[in-house]
Each structure stands twice: as structure tokens, then as C-alpha cells.
Picture (cartoon, rainbow, N blue to C red):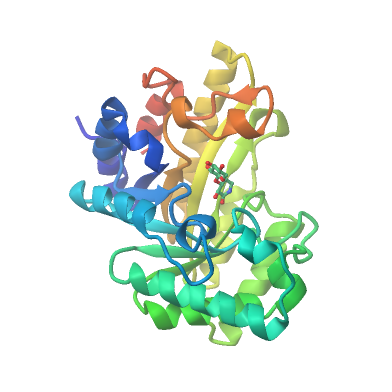
Length: 314
Ligand code: XIL
């Protein structure tokens, strides 16, 4: 029987999953990872704390392992992520940098990492989570030290290092039309006007049943498409307050289907990626106390109602 990727392929879309290095020893898990999906995102392996743990000392082992597995399974890779405020190494965060110093550190990191994966990845999440909920710039080491221009610089450096990789900005809580997605809309317009290399915006879509479904998502994706950009749902999960009940799982299934239909309805929405596919390896319980059951397969790797709903939507 066809998997989610085969079904998505009929619409000219991909269907992806995040994965992480520790779980790759679980053969029941890797069997599903290799058969249902055609796009893979490393959940942690390409983040700065892993790839440049000491200044100027690069470690590609985790990212390479995932790229190699993806290649063996004929899957593409959404590389994630170059510029973020989380999961930075201590050498970078535990001292002050002048703007000139930090700019050189950032340029070297981006150039070296993107060159290493040149020709091996479909896209890069170049800048992750740059805005606050109210649409102002997030106060990060990058913004504080370099000002808002760090975003255009990062995109230009990444493009120079791999001219064929699709370059994305990526964030959460931008699925609906609102102050945060407006900030991206305006930034993208400005970057396009300045001919900054940018191919897409990634909508993480870390949703929670208790906060309601982002009903304006389709219109929102479409307005970004109209700016000449690709869009993608990049980190989908739909969490709930535990315990999971049949009603909550049914509601969750509807949300997964509706998200997928919104993407299919918008020309330039290129695909959907879930933030891992099984509750066994979801990041949610570790970060949101009392919440979980966010993914389409349960902790025993059995498909949940959301899995069938995805199939029916595709
Ligand atoms: C998460 C990983 O899944 C966890 O394993 C890690 O401990 C923290 O980061 N937004 C992102 C992802 O862009 O990189 C995050 O991934 C989840 C939220």
C-alpha cells in the first residue's frame, strides 16, 4: 500500500518527518521512517551546539548520519537550522562579542556548514524564530549585536555557499493571520524588494487543541505564495492535555487533515513535515508539562486516527 509520501506525490507535494540520531537504533521505527516519508528533517543534529561545539571545530557526525540514511531511503533533507537563539554552544553565549566579531563568527558558521552539505540538502531553515508574538524582532544575541540586517546577511551567505539549496525563514505561531505572520509578510516583501535570496517561509505548526485551530491558515499561506515564495508546514504536531481520549484523538485527526488540505489548496505550499511521527519520540512531553499524544502514531508505533485522516486528506 502507498505511504503518506506516495499519496502526497500525486499532488506534487512531499510528506516529511523530523527524526533524531538516538532513535535510529530502533528498527521498527526506522522501518516506518523509511517507508512513509520522502523528506527528512534532523531534529537536532544540524544545530549549532552539535555542529560547532568549540569555536572553529566542526562536527558533522550527527547530521551526516541522517543525510546518509535519507539518501539510502531516497528521501530529501530539509536542513535545520543555521541561525537561532536556542541550542547554541556555551563558547558563543557565555561572552560578549563586538558586532564585527560576531558577524565573522556567524559568517564562518553559515559558510562552513552550508558548504559541507552543499548538493546534499533540499533546503535550509536559515533563520529560525526571529520574531516575537507581537511582531517585533526577538531580542536575541543576533538581533542585539547585529541589528535586523543579520537576516539578509545570513541569507546571502547561505546562498553563496550553496546556490541551489532553497532558503527559508521558519517560525511557530505564524499559521494564522496576525501580528507575527504580518511581521514575516512585511519582512519578506522588503527582502524581495532588495533581491535578498529567499525561497520560502516555513510554518512550524506546533498546534495545541486547547488553543484552537488557526482557521486563517489557507489565506495566510496564499498571501505568502503571492509574494512569489514557497511555503511549507515544517514541524507539525497537535498536542493535547493528557490523558488522550477518543474525542481528543478524533479532534486531532481533523486538525491534521485540515492542515494538509490547506497546504494542498495553495499552489506553492510544497509539502508537510511532522515533528517526528510517533509519540514515542515526540519532544512535547519533555517541554510542555502534562501535554503530549501529539503525533499520528502512538508510543507503540501504532497508527492513530490522525494517520488515517492524513491518508484520506491526501
Ligand atoms: C526541538 C527538538 O525536537 C528537541 O529534541 C530539542 O530538545 C529542542 O528543540 N522549534 C524548532 C525545533 O524549530 O528545532 C525544536 O526542536 C522545536 C521547536
